[in-house]
Amino acid sequence: MLGPLLAFVAAQLIGRTVAFLQFGDANALPLRMTATTLQQGLLVLAGTLLLGLTPVFMAAQQTLISYQQQVARSARPPIWQRMYLDILILIAAGYGYYTLRSQGSLVPIAGAATADPFSNPLSLLLPATALLGASLLMVRLFPLIAASLAGVGQRFIGATTLLALRHLARSPEQGRSIVLLTVLTLALGSFSASMATTLDQNDADRIAYATGGDVRITERAELSRVEERWTTLPAWEHGQVPGVQSWSRVRLSDVSATVGGGGTASGQLVALDRAGYATGGWWRDDLSQESLGRVMNVLAAEPQAVVVSRGFLAASRLRIGDPVTLTIGDSPSDTVTQDFLIRDAIDSFPTVYPVPGEFFFIANYDYVYLVDDPATYDVILKLAPGTDTETVVNAIRERGFTVDGVEDAKSLIAATRERPERVGFVGLLSLGFVAATGLTMLALLLYSLFSFRRRMVQIGVLRAAGLSMAQLIWLLAFELCFLTVTSAIAGTALGIAAARLFVPFYQLGNTIEARTPSFIVVIAWSEIGRLFLILGTMLLITLLATTLLLRRLRIHEAIKLGQELG
Image (cartoon, rainbow, N blue to C red; front, side, top):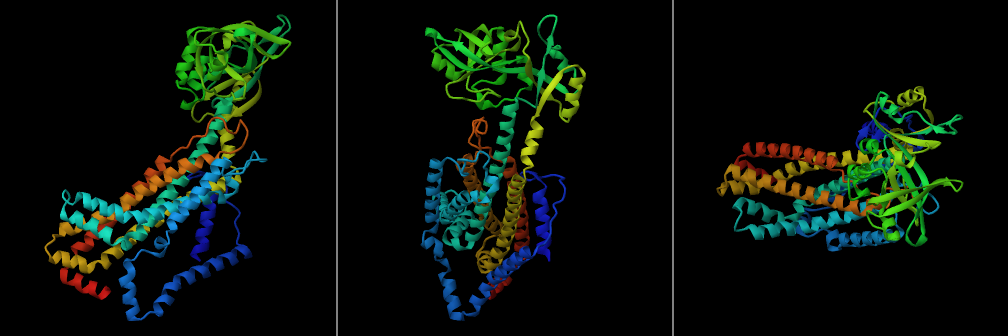
């Protein structure tokens, strides 16, 4: 009955997943045991029992002679190594990766802009297969690594360390299971953690790029019947609202630039308050070779300064410092022409999406709308931590501003993360990571204990040959640490490499908005560090247990017990 109970607990944790390894206080899922679920559980139980009894059935058919023959042949490479199964799996994974490079995505996006890997967990099959092949290859290479270190360091390292390395090189079958399990679980754990972190971060970046900051509100100016123009309240009053740390007016307008030879180039003009955007606007380092503060300082140097897209300089053959004339207006009947000086060039800017043949320009809001205020404009707000967006918007309305729309980046990100398919997908990754960690810890402890019992005779002989207790402890400790640390480093490296290779293909959507800003792979260093901390703690406990067993062991007892076990 423990299995169904754990299954219910796991399902509830999946339903409460907020982000990778983060669980919230969502309402409990309405779980129930159905006849189909019960049948599937019984089938799994029957299969597990059958697999568990298989070694018993095989052992019952053996005689003493056949058993001794099997022990003598145990040093032979396993069948998967003799058949080069690891190489075949890697070849298949390589072909799959080549196909992906041609297709461009792990998720078919043609005809479905909303398709994503959350709705199809089988999209993880290819990277998992690649990691399995790489882990098996690492098991094949591990004895060679130990032998190489023993050969290189035989004149520099102590006899005990050399003995440990040669034992690992000459008896690979004893550490094969723990190496495979550690490498594979660390690889899958690092990959799944990095994948979940990357998808979360890029979703947040995509939404922040669209809003430009924490909160983006659309306001409408009032038409003055006396002056016959649009008027607004002083913009600085936004900063007087409790909870608002900075503000910046932002307005996107269609624009055409007059370039040399009488030609024109179309695009979008982003007029903004540079001081407020420098402290409250969203920015990512890959948007430009310069920092956001440096770009905003360029606008602060002179009112008519303009920052242009790098592509505009190449197309217009203009240079930094050249003048440019922009015709600004959302309709042909309502345009204004202004002169600017090009002071900088960047690759992209939040709220502006790349369109082939079009460019963007960043200018000072007060210079662009020096004469008349626009009918509508946006205000990007940076809020203090814990500030309620609705309260801030209501306070802005109470001051007399007409608010027509609100885009809250945090609410949009939360809505994206609450999608059922995403919650289930990330929840499975989180529980899989936890299960893999626990399995590795248990395997490490069991390997240490079984290895100690299996090598009783060798320990007794080495002790009788003159090795001190400290040397014996170092021998077993070095073997265990070398196995664990080498496998952990290899598994983590494989997981990170797989993340950099495969995760970019999980980018969602086929529209410009869905693929801007560029997709960046984020390695989950904090989760990986947490896993190494747990692994190190378990390794320390295992070493202490091994030391305690060694100190309590006597030579004649070790030899006698070893002979009985053999």
